[in-house]
Amino acid sequence: MDVLTAGEALVLLAAEETGSLHAVERFRRFSAGAELNVAIGLARLGLRVGYLTRLGDDAFGRFLAEVLQREGIVADFASVDQGSSNGFMLKSLEADGTDPQIEYFRRGSAASRMHAGDLARLDGTRARHLHLTGILPALSPGCGELTQRLAERARKQGSSLSFDPNLRPRLWPDREQMIRSINGFAAISDLVLPGLAEGQLLTGRTQPDDIAAFYLALGAGAVVVKLGPDGAYCANQQGLRAHVPGVRVQRVVDTVGAGDGFAVGVVSALLEGLTLEAAAQRGCAIGARVVQFPGDCDGLPTRAELQV
Image (tube, rainbow, N blue to C red; front, side):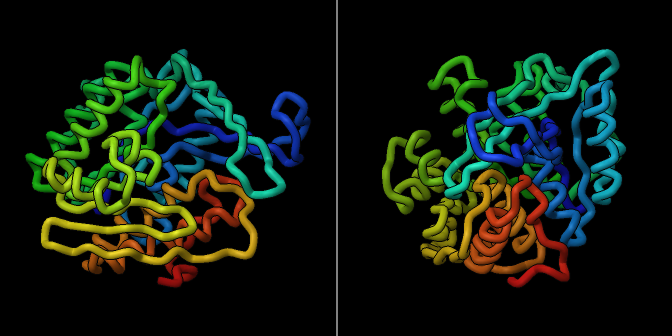
């Protein structure tokens, strides 16, 4: 395989009318979940992608199994957790393109029941690259152990490793544990992809260059700080320090999923041998495309649609 990732696949019910979530009557169904979004984006670009997860023994889980098959993702590592339900989320529609309201329903979900024993499903397989986020280790102690073992396995096999903090503070017992765990994974990664606000919280630093320097000092190979419409700042251990401008769009439909699209761009470009700066440019382009669509991943391009 080219890429392996792991996480919780969610069903997204996106509002089709504006207003508070409790008052909305019409929703449209999509797939969601940060790691699944990345898996779908990479698969659409022609990479062979494996996705480790547990799906619910319900209609939502069956829908997501069909999504994996339709998108061409290697589904051998997605098991059905008998008797458990699949997580889902509600998302509002904002007429002005601001960040939507989101409510998650994932407590005790099938994916949250994963643990280090799920690694057995990967026996005999190897991927060139492993992509992880800070969501999986936050789901449960078992998921935290699984994430650590996945990272260790990648290091042992010689796979490259990217890590997107993707902070979900409500999933963590406390802020200190979140920061300690997230920065621990970042320190052993070849590529770290924090958003500006995430980097500020995790490092205590305010400027993109200082955030990048923090992670380089910890041992990360390269850092790309996401700056939203302002683009990205990238730096690596070889001395690169560069700002990549953002891609302007006429209308923002939905901001959710833009960071996952950015990760798709950066990871795919690096696996193709492009420079970090060129990879960040592709990340900005895909992120800008994603915000013009209502779902988390329906804006992710195919290879034919890729512009950078």
